[in-house]
Length: 543
Image (cartoon, rainbow, N blue to C red; front, side, top):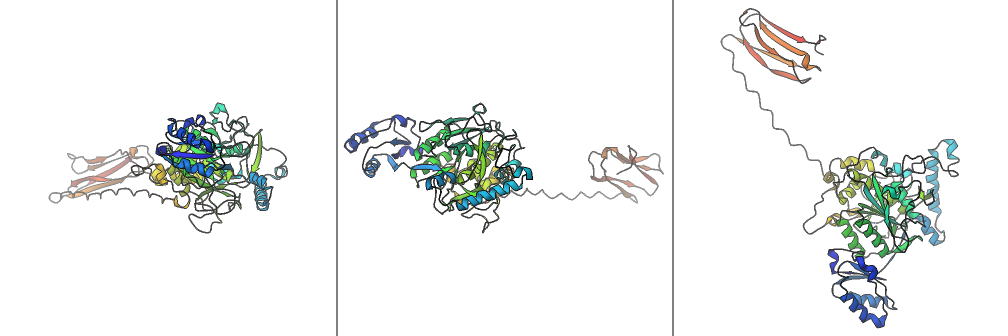
């Protein structure tokens, strides 16, 4: 299969721009090439975006070259293969080889979990389902700090999971009555997860909390978010690049703000890169798994600049042995031995950057629901600027193994309280540019925190106007009062005891402000006898 994009890409970038592509598929061998090319040129439905062409040919490269010569066509590419990024899936493909490090990581995670259980429960941990558990990753990303806060969004934020599907009947997951909907693909339903991977990832993002069963999640309250499920992969765990983009575009059309993609495969695609840039320009944040090859290779879509690439950690906070490391790794999340929901009201432990990805996507959605005026790049940068530095990180700041650090929802929430620009930088790109102008990815994504501007200093208090001197031999009598905690109870008088015709010379109170000095009372007085009297109406004195 070959993917073709045309010069209208700027208006509707990437795959999925031509909604009529299902009717526009063309087939033809070498002998029909001329007819097929004329059909492409004459068909008015193909004007912008992309189309999928099924070519029956022995020379695909020649077909691609011929298509590339058409006026207005800017890119033609062979379609690729995508697959889930879990170690269980990849070990199955490899026949189970190379699993020793992964097994040790699972054993370490299980040991850490059982250490926290009462002795009588630890022994039975693997043989029965306990009351609701909090998987270690939920605490690691500090999601519970944000749970008591009230979101500012007028409607629940929509989170899209592009994966193998979703068990909509699961006891511990939101249902269609909670607003869950989806996109069918490959002739399979979004609500049929014949693999289990998609249901597992969704459970990390939004398994129901506080119901006494199963597990909790980053977003445990189904009234504060909704799921949209994009069937980007088949029940076998794999799919096409074009199928993934179809699912992503369906998410955007459904109003999703955060898209979680625990998948990868294939190399760089100019058409895909343009597609993700266009989606980013629509103020959508896409998060993807960095890959499980354990090497420095770039995995896509995670390594596109408009996508957040997530590395995996063990329960101790160290790098998972399988997690890929490169310049596009941006942030880290728990990915080794993560427990979550799987189809059939069951729960299981999976490992992979697939498991780290939904932790970060879930945190992004949790934060955005509380700060809806922020843009995608500001939520993205706020997570970077507030991340925890791993204990095993050799250098401060960014590195290729952990990115900018471990995502921390509580830290990011507090940072965002200072304002979107303070936490995440500018969101007003230059003329002619979209929000993808700020999408650099990985080591280049970090932006320095905007310092809170110092308050404008108050003008100096002018010196008091000096009082005129008293006439003759008179002297100035000044009264200075500092009120107590009950200023309304305090009054005072100054009386001339020698000259009854003068009597009370000055008086003050009651006052309105506690613990405040009052010193603007004075009078000129002759040499004589005066009575100063201060009174507390409650009778307990000035205190």
